[in-house]
Amino acid sequence: MEIFAHRGSSGTHPENTLPAFVEAAALPVHGVELDVHLSADGELVVIHDEKVNLTTNGKGYVKDMTLAELKTLDAGSWKAGEWAGSEMPTLAQVFGVFENTHHVLNVELKTDVFPYVGAVEKVAKLAAEQGMEHRLVISSFNHPDVKLAMDRYQLTGAILASNILVDMVAYTETAGTKRLHLSLPYALRHGAELIEKGCEVYVYTVNRLDYAEQLQQIGVSGIFTDYPEKMLGELK
Ligand code: G3P
Ligand code: CA
Image (tube, rainbow, N blue to C red; front, side, top):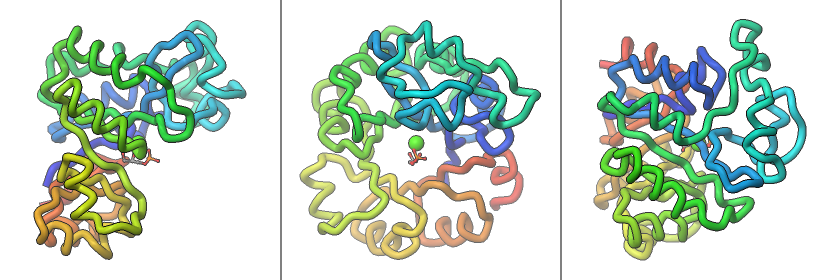
C-alpha cells in the first residue's frame, strides 16, 4: 500500500510549507500530497484553506492577495515557534524540492469553492516546464477540472470525494478514472466493495495504525497520512 505524506510531513512540521516538504522528500514514501490555490495575480500557491487566517499571521482570502503580499506572511509560527518565518510556497518551489527524488506529487486543486479559472492550465504548464508531469496526480472535489487535466493534458486524475450518493462505479466511467481518493469514514464503509468492482481506492487522512492495517487488508492502493515517518516504521 502506497503512503503519501499529507500536506507534506504535516504532523511534525507546518503543513504545506517547504520544511514539511523537505522532510517528506527525505523519506522513502511513495508520494506527497499538497493543496493549491491561485493568488490575486494568478500565481499557484500552496495552502489548504481559501483564507490565510488559520495557518498564517494574516487575514483574508488567498484570491484577494498578490504573491508578494502572501510571501510577507508567516506560515510557520501557528505550528510552533521554531518554524517562525516559514513562507507560503509557490507550486514551482515545491516542485523544486522534489526535482531529484522519486516521489509522486498529488496536487489537489482547490477549485471547488472559488473556480480559479485557468488553474489546471497553469499546473500543467508548470509541470511540463519542471519535468514533473509523469509523476503528478491531479485530484479535486471539482471533478470537471480533474477531467480537463486528464483529457487535455494527459495527466493522471483522481476523483476526490468525502461522501457520494450516486453509484460510484458508474460515476468513475463518466469521470474517466478509476482512481478514487476517499475519506476514511466513506472508505471504511464502502472501500472493499468498490475495490472488488475494480476501483483504485486511496484514503485520507489515516493517522492511526489500526485503520491503516484494516485498509491494507481490504486492498486499498494508498493512504494519506500526516505522520508518514511513523507510518512507514509501523506498517508492515
Ligand atoms: O487529498 C486528500 C485530502 O487532502 C482531502 O482533504 O481537506 O485535507 O484537503 P483535505
Ligand atoms: Ca488536500
